[in-house]
Amino acid sequence: MPIKAMTQEWMDAYKAAIQADPDYRNIAKDWEGSVALVVNPDPSKNVPEPIYLFMDYWHGDVGEFVVCDKAKAESARFVMTGDYARWKQVAFKELDATKALLQGKLKMKGDLPYVVRNIKTVNKVIDILGKVDTLWPDDHK
Amino acid sequence: MAYDSDLSFNYFGPTKIVFGVNASRDADIEMGALGGSKAVVVTDKGIIKAGLVDGITECLGGKCAGVFSEVPQDTGVEVVDAAAEFARKNGADMVISVGGGSVIDTAKGMCILLTEGGTLRDFNGVQLLSRPQVPHMVIPTTAGTGSEVTNAAVIMDREMGQKRLLVENFNVPRMAILDPKMTEKLPPLLTASTGMDAMTHAVEAVHSIPHEPITDGLALHAIRLLYRYLPVCVENGSDLHARGQVQIAATMAGWAFGNAMVGIVHAMAHSIGAIAHVPHGIANGILLAESMEFNLEEAADGYAMIAEAMGVREKGMDDHDAARAAISAMREFTLRIGHPQRFSEMGVSEQDIVKAADLSLSDGSIVNNPRIVMDSSEVLDIFQKTF
Ligand SMILES: [Fe+2]
Image (cartoon, rainbow over all chains, first blue to last red; front, top):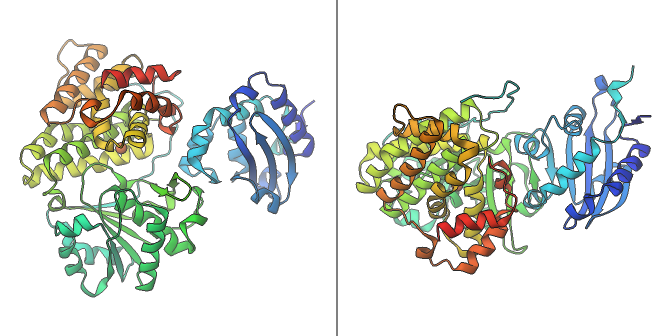
């Protein structure tokens, strides 16, 4: 049964999928710090308001994974912002996250060299995201 | 070369180019086209000493808001902050950088502070800007970095002990004036090594994973021009025709790698630069041919195009043979321009290359290399062959 994207239930499922992944812990062993995703609203795709997601990653462990408010999102070590359609492309791996950053399709507050040094971790969590059975807002009939 | 049927890319290159001998003397006229009325000139002490700034400030006259010349070899957050403060105090509404990579990167940082306010310490991220910045005109004094047309700047944060990478499409320089007079006095070794930086940008843009037809076109013509005119510049620095062709090539290579990215050569050059302070262009020049050898199976079709650009593809050669011809021509080329051949000549130790090999794996450029690098021993092997 697909879960509605960008809801708390979906965040819980995503966290569980990361924890269940046999390779994640080792790949992410050097990663320190929280990541927030900001989804810009797009009423035409049933995303009327901005959505803020906060995820805490620490040396292969995963902590808090919550839908949050703007202030909490902005407190993350890395804050990535993009239009809903871009994020969906990332989830479907139609858009490479680093390429999207360099081309300005996504914005990021935070230390870019750190992210590129740990690109395997980033790619791994995106990989897992693609495996969460998701109902996207614009999939609604 | 075949491109995938699902080819998709963004090409971004908004910089206006003004080229010609003494074109830098038109800086005042060109300022108007950028909407600027008072420009701060950013440069370094060496460039002032070489007499390259006088002509520009003279032509700017009352439109010059002052000269900031405190830019060191590797610029830093505090330098950018001080330069922006200087510009603000003097009422500048645009920035003219006269120099090489470090000067241009300083000016890129300044444009952000002059538009957005604050200090560079507040500014850490990628593509954060959402509007055009204070106009930046670049007058390069080396022909190599291509920084005059790219969206990136590297600025040291000495307090944090790390490099900051700014990547901002809204902060690409609006204009570059390529004046062959500005590179006329570059000594032969610096001419050769900065030229090999440009050559490496072009070759890496061709073999990188995100390469596409526009960047290939730019890179291949850059290779053509560099192959023909860089040796002339090394031989006779005052040949302004050759100097100009090499400047144009460096800028074209800048557009190419600014969009298609770079690969293993830059990953290794950044690393050996950080560990053993080998100048960037020299590290690239030493590594380029051997790295092409490493990528040969994955990039033979690209290297075959490079062989054509160099004029070394003979009749009857398949792509693989042509690629090999390009690699030997590249080796021979570095000898011809008197470029250093081995890291041991540059005071690098065997421990340094082991450390640099490890560090290379975590450099962002390596992810665009056509041959996937699985282990630092593969990188070490290239370092050993060039040691
Ligand atoms: Fe370079």
